[in-house]
Length: 377
Image (tube, rainbow, N blue to C red; front, side, top):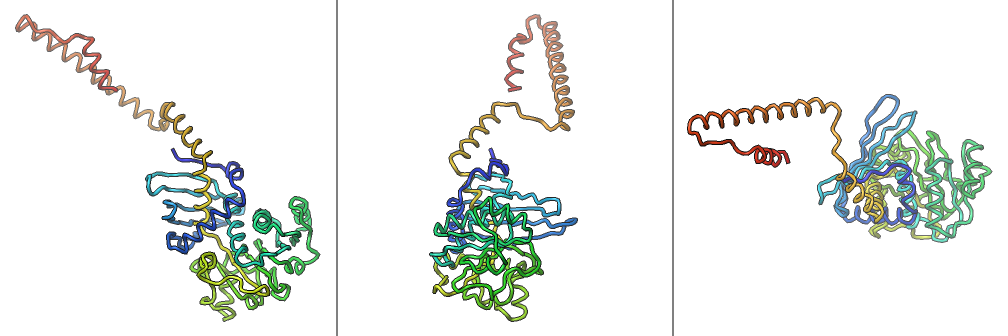
């Protein structure tokens, strides 16, 4: 039986360390060409967008997809796993929390390869759920972080965020940008980080503004970056406004942009000096969702729950769709009528035989009932 996990269950299942390991493993499989992950497909819906992100991970033996419908009233997310070996639906997960965890885990993996290992300060732009998941993931990956400095447009939300995450508000956006690790997790259509604010050795992780017309970073951030990396070039060319417009104007060249998996696998150099500024622009891959969902669905607790659910399902009668009841009832009536007709025919045949020979008899009624019972079974 397929496993179904709700948002509440997903939020309880995974640690930052497990998410880090799942995404890092996915990036290695991507580098080994075990993963097919095309760019996200977006379709317009009234006041929003419907997106589908397919993926095949041959290393995990899974095909699947992530899908969501973004509207002003909300954005439901769903991940579906299909087992290639078992030919079945492996799991279905409500995936808003999963998306936050996997995005932050990917940023933490990128930071391990692109930030200075002795980073002690973390600057966060904005105060939403993505920002919160990044604070947790990066603190787990960099235990030396001592100060988290937060810039947000709403002072009330920023202060509440700081109380919850043991952080302090930035006096200005420049103060947050002067940290060793800088994360932008905004929905802003305007620039939020300027290159002149960055200090030598900074790592910038930009996870917001995944629209061709939106930008979080100015041109100077790109010009100062020794390494610019993305998760998937095909997707970045279609979605990442922080690179699309600068590339069109010649500020950066797509040939100089590398995919993160090549850095993680060691095929492309990451940070090469303490003074370099490095950049990872994240737009998100379904491969990360599948990897994290697989970690949960294959955990001992989830396997036990799947087996228990299967046993419960086998013990209870199979439910029929309400519109099928009339058809089932008609079939049962027809079956009963046919059996009555057959019994009348046998009795008539027995009487005719007895009149003709004086010896023929019909089969015992108990034997007939036994035969009918076996047929029904």
